[in-house]
Image (cartoon, rainbow, N blue to C red):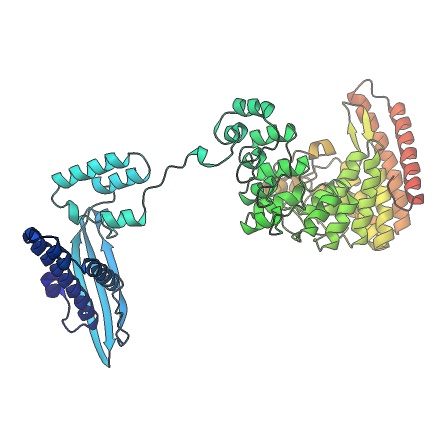
Length: 600
């Protein structure tokens, strides 16, 4: 106590005085108890009566001592006063600067406090320097090993005892943060050993999924009863979501996809909660219930959103393949329909590319941007027209679905005059969405694709947008055809002719090369501009007649070129096949129109 008095900043500090009073009381209690013990031991020969009289209040004295020690410790730790009449207030703080990273085994402790009481203000600055040891010193390293179960408690205790014997400064060791060995133990005690057997009622399959090899999982899948549960109500499917290989084994074996644990949580919710994208997709594709809710009425999308797994949420949107799945998402309160993926594409573009008119309609009803452009500068309209062109080599249900999807987009004000960033003379202001509706030849299979769908597209634009926009699209068709007839070089995003070669996108031509090509073909460009200037002065019907004639002329040309490249390519047979194909398309369109636009 005398040492504490000597180090006290001021003997008039009320807080210190109160703490000193408590400590003095503890000292008096200890001295009284010690005196009784000494007296009792010396006079034990006087008999039991004297001992009973001496220690009759022993229990009360010990309890009083414990209480006084507890109060003194609390006052010293919190540096507060528990007297009701105390009006002392202290302001300030402590800054600790450890220099261990500079190789200096010292730390500076700077304190500055202002103490106020009864109109008095006291400034209490303090500057102390104390010796420290690194975090990697032997003593703290022993504690770390014990805490992480690298050594046993007995081994750690033995090493600490040996360190205490060999290092006289051991009791005063503190780390750079100012914590002693005891403080480190109190803050982070040793971790208890968690054994796999601690999870009750684990079946061999549960343990195989968590801890063993694929062969072991495969063996126990064949031997175990399906959907066995542990104490938490978890099936093996719940535990397999972090290992896609095991998850697929269980799904293929017919394990219950919508099994619920004790809280009603399904495997899909588990996967969404821990951001297991592959597991979520596998479970959805296998038919997991998207509407399932736990006991708190939370669904799998809630778990994904709660953990802020937004990439997973957007991925789920992109794998929705029909209106029913989308309705399930909407029923769960999901309305994020304008988030883009890595290609800048919206979900409506995926739906349009699949020609799913019903899903496109629902997405549009929930406010998706119909004219949004992805990083390739394509809109939803571009993907439907591209699918229409790809399907035009045969007559199947895709054609009718594409036509219905086009009608849905046009009825919802899709922009038919939106352009990309093309600089090619074939479309100097940018390519229109319908630029891909052109004829092309596949010499390897002896087939030429007729651009008959350009005529159907013009009919739709005329119906929904009027003659002006239809004429703009028609002029773009004519310009591209003239560009091809003149043998000019394509330098735009659509330079790869044909749908099959559009699947793999090549690198764009550098601007320097484009400038050089345009400069070399400047005379051809001037001729093309003069011809287009004359065409633009014509009326829509006259231009349409010109386009039909141009289709026939260019078709004959590409057929002859194809025949020259392949000996067994028969131009007459090709014409006959194309006439039959066009007739079939027209008949299909008539049936579709008479059915009121419904797809059989």
